[in-house]
Length: 356
Image (cartoon, rainbow, N blue to C red):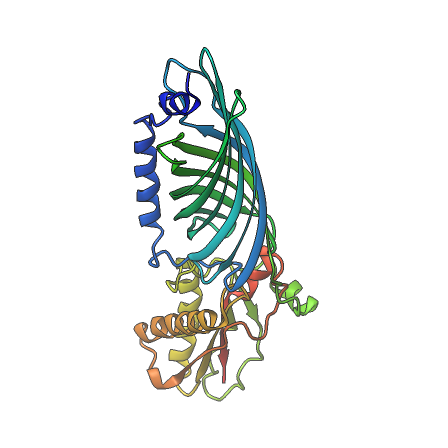
């Protein structure tokens, strides 16, 4: 048998139609990963590197061939996370070897490629997020026939992917990921879709702000609303002045995740402030918003302003004049706890109400 006729005759262009629902699901997931999903991201503005390993499967043979189309692969990758939802990622993949045998010859193909694509994140919690990937790969395939014939093959493919990540710390994440490479190889030799399922570890090159004061952290660790006692106003005859309500700090539990909407607990605390201000019409307050150090400084500044404004708007809705409330956003400034821990970051995401 002519060796080229054997390679073409192996009919390795067969695609299993069952893959297409999976591809459609990946595309749908990627469409969900839009800028509208604006979850807080630990690593915005940072570079990262990673490695992964796992199982590769080649849509390689027709039913009449004796095939070994499963292989063990390994990869390295790196990227840059531009903001809370978008990263640009590239990598190298060694996808292993697949083998097909006929009665007279055996064809073995070794596959490796380089990929580049967009990674779109959707944060589920402060630690878990889903992601989708869409991009392209440049494939290098080396074909060897048992008769001694060898040939190299190169082509471009569409790459789609989806996965889940878990943040171990500010710098470390683990991920499990599925990727699909379309039509790897040329139709004149052997063309195959490749499915690739991996487990990986990523390292982000950034650091948290560790300049928190230990005494301040101890004062706010357990409180959703921490109170600071003030001396009562001087008594004026014949009727004593109303006892002042302590200034409040809205921290853990005061806002929904990455939201400016006040929780019922936060509103209850502000109701006390509103009552005190109504009983003391000369008193003014400062409402100051803060964030933790995750994300970009520009994003955090805007978020702190919006959360402070949300508290001010609620007080005004309770009958407090706008002229008596000064609203300030300070972003990442003046942390009261350690930003390298989840508990510390929760304490630093706060709004303080101070009496003038």
